Image (cartoon, rainbow, N blue to C red; front, side):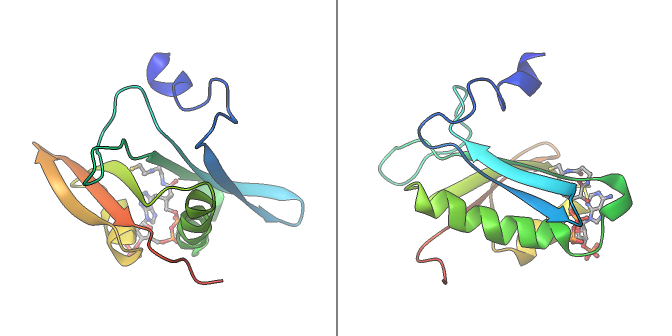
Length: 125
Ligand SMILES: CC(C)(COP(=O)(O)OP(=O)(O)OC[C@H]1O[C@@H](n2cnc3c(N)ncnc32)[C@H](O)[C@@H]1OP(=O)(O)O)[C@@H](O)C(=O)NCCC(=O)NCCS
């Protein structure tokens, strides 16, 4: 399943960054990013941007976990040297609102598939 394993194989490569949401010893969700071979977006200098993946366990969705994961991932990605993070989302996915609130902007569209980028700038401590 290359569309899945490309997110996970050899995890810990230079540039990989991720965070996990924990509560009471339970893992509620995770967000992570890495530069994939099939590059979605590049910065102004042509360097490949990492692409984000996020999931929250079904019983814990819509309670703010995703927003906190996105905050944490922005810091983690900045810490390993990334200047921005990219993602794709279906235009009909309600997650689009979450990404917009987190500072992602639509930079491209292919049918219903949106490409979004968030500039990391200086992350607050
Ligand atoms: C998308 C997802 C990671 C968001 O995490 P979350 O903890 O539910 O999000 P938060 O509670 O912080 O924020 C709520 C926002 O998340 C989005 N959201 C909530 N439930 C969702 C769901 N079941 N599917 C997709 N997005 C959802 C909405 O934008 C919502 O904002 P709204 O209340 O204005 O509609 C999570 O819902 C999920 O894993 N969904 C299923 C998989 C998926 O759609 N992944 C994204 C692929 S691009």
